[in-house]
Image (cartoon, rainbow, N blue to C red):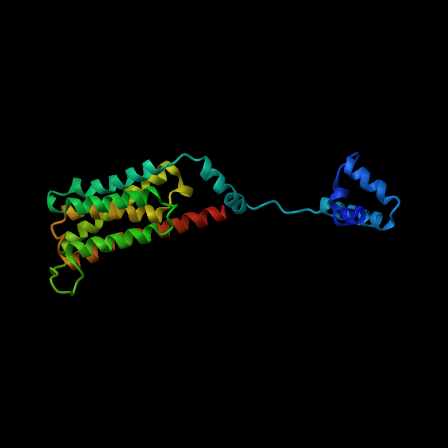
Length: 248
């Protein structure tokens, strides 16, 4: 590539170099004897001047938050122990408030509790955490009581007990979400996944404490329904927090 080709291809960059720069001086010395290169440099100077005089609007708060989020995530210490503790607290609630403790389902309950703890700890990393919690809730219901309407399933809604079960699951979701919100703030709470994981942990405890834990209709309406309601409430809260941060 000749000097002329190199200069004309990079005229704007050369024109932007500060006075006294060796490369700038070399190219300008050449351009004094080459009208085509001098014209390219003058056009480059005009472009640099136009860019310097342009007034760009400052970035919005939303843009700044989006740009800073990955950096802050790298700088922020891991909060998985807190999220895991939130799920364990949700698991403890039905145990503390119930006098019926069936030890038969400990293995299944602890397995689901482990999953709920993992989902809570990874809230925000696993974007489908609430859906995974709901699927695990349904799996526990199928394993414990089956699917209503199929053969070999125990009937019964047990509404009075079910209201208590639903309240305990929602309480577990609320405790888990409130604990994480309190310690991390709204921007890092991810309420949908956290609430679903808290409700799932409470359902795991109800597998031990609920007196109707083998009745399929009861499980699907109140146990699985509780996890679904918690996930929906968490999603609504998450959306509200997001919209509030965008408007601010």
